[in-house]
Amino acid sequence: MSAQFPIARPRRLRSSPAMRRMVSGTRLHPADLILPLFAKEGITEPQPVASMPGVYQHTRDSLRKAAHEAAEAGVGGVILFGVPAVKDARGSAADDPDGVLQVALRDVVSEVGDALVVMADTCLDEFTDHGHCGILTPSGDVDNDATLERYASIAVAQAEAGSQMVAPSGMMDGQVGAIRAALDKAGHTNVPILAYSVKYASAFYGPFRDAAECAPQFGDRSTHQQDPAGPLEEALREVRLDLAEGADAVMVKPAMPYLDVITRVRDEVDVPVAAYQVSGEYAMIEAAAANGWIDRERTINESLVAIKRAGADLILTYWATEVARTL
Image 1: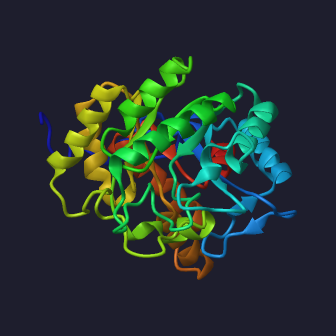
Image 2: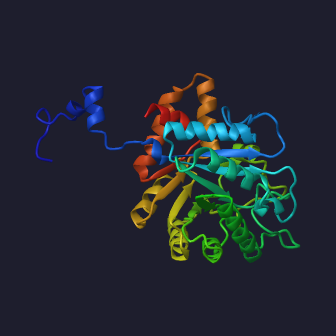
Image 3: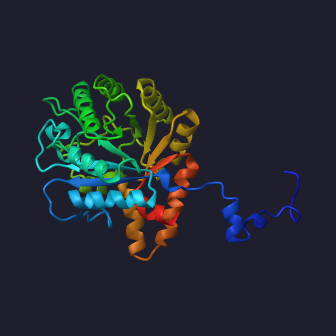
């Protein structure tokens, strides 16, 4: 540093809103944001998610409306999750061409076209009656390799329904490679994969499991999702493996508790990095704001700026449309 106080006065560059805006080092853009949406089969009215104020399980009509509003606001993409009326042990509805998620994909693509990227969560937990992310062995463990076959079939079904990107979230070893091979074999070579490469076995997912109706009926997901206290090198290894298998972009989930991981992943790779501001992050801010303990809008914006500053190119957030309208 060449100058000291009183010659050096950092406050000069913070002296007005216009000055602060001009020198801002972190900028959000609507296209950076991805809106998660839940489609539920067999309902006639949108169903509010009690633990996530402002979030709904959608009908076909309300889903199209939400996607249209996101596109109008300039949101970069939507990611769809399906809640079927009937579940079974193998998650048969997940790759059913007439299943809730494939119907939702066709509806949304028809509604918004190329105005934003329509993508799908590629997993089994919303579709299995046991709530786990894969096929179970007789002893109740998740069978990694049998699950890969299901993921491959699901990804192809989603692509054929119009999904412009698939996002495998189950954290099975080899899932990206299996999905890439299946997509290519089926002629979907141009459908990219957004890999949930760094997904922690987090306590922040609780409200999501209400929205997607996918809480495990026994046990947990700690054998495949990463340990929150695990070494950072493990996260980077997962990223490298997914890229070697053909991932086009990678994700860190959750976001706020793992800003350091987002930064390290951003430094490591030359593909887009996404971060998922998960349901628990959303619910905590909404609950505190509802009690008058924090300024809701400022806290939302600050949380997103922090994720962006940490290195995320893309942010999955339930506030995507709301925030995009203000940018």
